[in-house]
Amino acid sequence: MNGWRKWPAWLLPCLALTCLAAQVAPFVVYHVPGPSAIAATSIPAWHPGGYDAADLARAHAFSRALLFGGMARSATWILAMLSLVACGVAAGFADSSKGRGQAWLVRVLLLVGLFLFLQLVELPYLVCRFFHFQAFGLTALTLAGWTKLMLVGSIVPLALFVLKYLLVVCSLPLFKRFWWIGACLCIFVLFEVVPEVASRRYPLDPVESLTPMGPGPHADSMKAVIDRAGLDLPLMVVDLGERVNTANIYIAGRHGREYVVVTDTFLRQFTPEEVTLALGHELAHVRNRFTLLAIHKTLSFLTLASGFFLAFMLTGRSALRISAAPRVVLVLMLSLALTSLVMQPLANSFYREQELQSDIRAVELAGDPAAYGRLLLKMAKLNLEPLDMPWWEKIFFSSYPSTTDRLAALKRRAG
Ligand SMILES: [Zn+2]
Image (cartoon, rainbow, N blue to C red; front, side):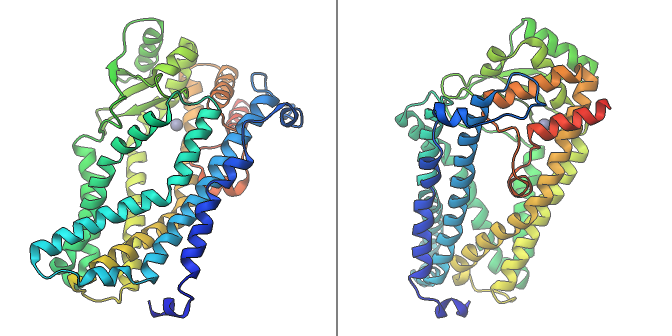
């Protein structure tokens, strides 16, 4: 890593600060569109009704700010991490304590500090995103409510972050030269295999409440389509109405013990027939669950293993003393970020294909393609999704096909 020293010491932190400011810029440029912006937007003629120029202008402004702000957020994260490596902060911590207990305390505190630091460099994006959601009417939260949610919601990720990198630190003296293999396997088992056998889910925040769905026309038509698919899944409702206005339906729970989760906003905004169509799509994922799970885990393992291998190469391809732990953690985090960036297009293309397949199965299971097309447009309208996206956004950032691609696939299928 000596190459760093040839760079001016101020360059990386300056670039990181520039990206920090760039997180805010897209939210200033893309705000709620006024009448002139709506008038300048034209909608493709072949689209069925239910999604007009005003929807398109709103979805465009909403999604571009999130996309470009998110890109600046990732760039800040990488540059901030590179700055930490380059300025030798890790070496400074390495020899800072003598006693064993004290040394472990320093390592844990260092990991907590690193987690908080990385939250801090993303804060401009997160705050702007909250105000953006508020301006577009997608959240009912106040700034105080959102802050509380953020703080409470960070506790579990912080604990998991510390646990994950403590495993890496422990693997240095335990596995010697094979520290990267040992740590990689431990993390894969603990974070990818165990959650499939134990519970996969923890409450995201204190506001979320999951309750069994009561009887009614929605429950009746949902049960009918689950029966038709030859499955037996409990129906649960999650109460989101207090804080967001976006609507969603999905399957949760570990393999073999799945259940349907529908947001209260979804039940309010969609008819029983529409909910049935959307559920048909989710049930197609359940029918395919083993293949999906196997491919998902394989991709996770490949990303993890190549990240660890890269970190091993960058840290000198040898056994390391435990005093090297802070530097190893930083290099490993950067390596994992790089390998997930490389693997992302592959994972995205796989998930996009799965979505298109599930659309087709949903139509086969639950209804006619025209009604399904109208449902896709209604969901895009409510969740402020643009109808289409540029090719590079599809490849690098989207695990979902655009509404245009989904409608085109249905059209092709119908012949
Ligand atoms: Zn899906």
